[in-house]
Length: 153
Image (cartoon, rainbow, N blue to C red; front, top):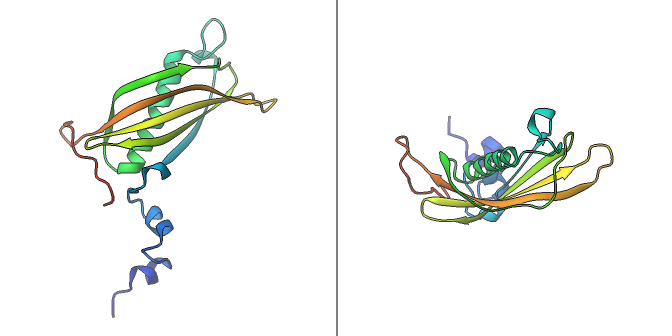
């Protein structure tokens, strides 16, 4: 029996950009790599002003940057730097928080990711940008050494 072509197996033309994205392969156009995920602010996450601890916000943003860089490169990544973290609005206990991460730049071993954190009042629906910043992620091999970012495999 003859082996089926990729189009016959998946029903999609392999040259179709959507088909390539669905295979889990990294994208050459890094501006298309975005991640969005949500958290809820619980009492253990706030300070005496009932607002989110800055360290918790940075942890969530770092997680979004990691997710975004791994989805782009499909390899192990670690954080090496965060830059220009700006806390614009307080995030209150009970708020829903959305992290939006986008690849800004790809270097030989690093990926720079911009993360925006939005707060939303779950009762009123009011949303606003609360925090934003950039994270530099570096690809690492099995030994934890920096390795080249694999693009377009």
